[in-house]
Length: 311
Ligand code: AVJ
Image 1 (cartoon, protein in one colour):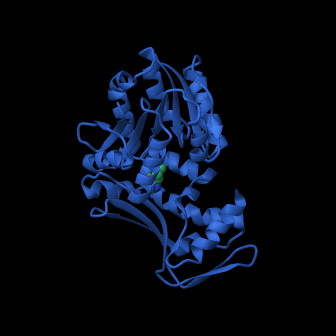
Image 2: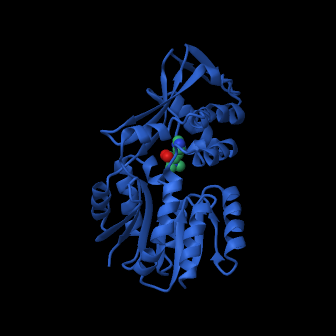
Image 3: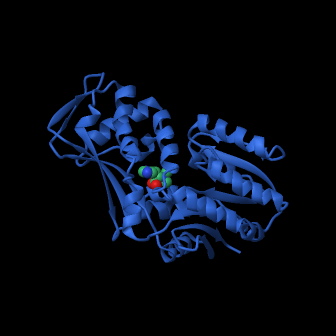
């Protein structure tokens, strides 16, 4: 794990333009900062997703063909949002097993105890590791399933990769299985720009924490105040891009002696967060092979829970 981190960081910081893969936001500090981001007024995504879960659980329940299914959640995190959906499905009498997959075993322990506290009758089988690998293995079991990818995590892929990802899921699903994804929608660009540049500067700390993490894990000597947070939403591409900007010409050294040079105003690319329209989501679903896509949105159409099925 640490070895790949080191290799990825060295590769990204010696590329031109420089980048840091966004999966590395989520160390312990990053997890905590992201929890704070999710509580921000400006970061509307989780709040609206939860609101939609509250209003569409019955329709999701009705769309599921079987009364005993595996609910597999990719990148499940702490399960706080999923809990509401599971509660609703349980109260309608759905019989299911919950299988949360995540790279972090820490977060899966939190997930498991939260679900067990509130839903003691539900069978829960958390699996830590690369969720795509685990998913491929699980898909060999023929149990009917609902696959979930919530929290707008799809946005961290470029549209090409997002389509490839959905195709991959489709190929590992059976005819009656369903896929439910939480996706942030295109909207007034001001609202999206504000979500990635909050007035309390939590997102700034979240972005700069990448450098803090390199200091902690690779013994680097980044001075965080010599870098700026530059988030930028491009409404044509439909993506919120995040960068770090070097405020001066500087050299940074890792514990093993490796040096990286930054020009004044040089950028490090750290994240993409693509937004879609409902039409684009339908097209993606069809291209991946699905026959039906249904959207559950809030009244303003800020966010969607989209259900992909074949029958
Ligand atoms: C966890 C990937 C959904 O892209 O909105 C929040 C991460 N980055 N603020 C997103 C994030 C900056 C978030 N996702």
